[in-house]
Length: 150
Length: 166
Image 1 (spheres, each protein chain N blue to C red):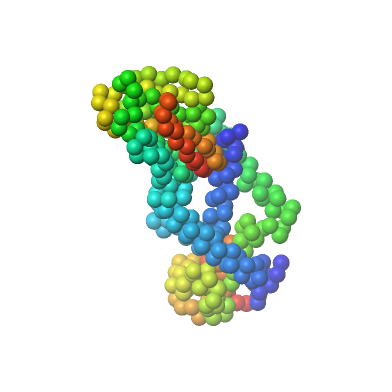
Image 2: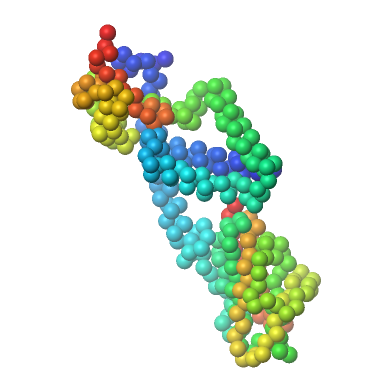
């Protein structure tokens, strides 16, 4: 029972923390973000397992975590209004080359981030070549270039 | 699916604004948690360190806030001239001992015995005029409000209360 409660508590706390920190949190992983993720994993490991390092405990914790994940996705498909709260929604940041500054500021995304995504995914050089830039639910930026217009 | 310009996208600006507000509140709560943790509300720190008792007879230094299976420490100071027949008999309630996982007592007691709802630790002392300092290390296991009491057999009693976090 203890292991299930621990796993459930950690799952909910992590979900809450990552939703509160926003889309930007650890989506585009830099080397430092990667190290940070490892440290977060290390910090939660002890709370998840307690003093019980048995295979049984590990299996219970893994099954509980995956079960909660599956359960939440089922709940989400039954109650679609929960979707945005659990998984966020996409947000258009650039429309026809125009930067929507307030949205960028609130999402903590800079023009440099958009240009970076434009260069790396579409090979674009300037903002005015971007038709749409969308901050996806996952925190990644999707770039739709103007030349794709038909 | 909703449309924004030519994009088929489930953008929801009203939700996004609500979410930004909730996130800002969440950041505030996070900042408060960090400050509270620094002050000792969740364990060691200035707000957690507490003392109960009288320097002349018996003093208990304890942590107001402890964490389940974290490291806890009680420092009990027995004042001078509290020994009788060359020994100090210090007790803790069995109720409190049930709320902790006792790890060690320094110096080691020369004798341990049960006496009703108390556990008595006997320390032999060479010089009764000297202060005796006993350090008890433990892992807290009690959750919520945990009441404890320590005392000397036929002497002073000190009560203290801790809060155990999960």
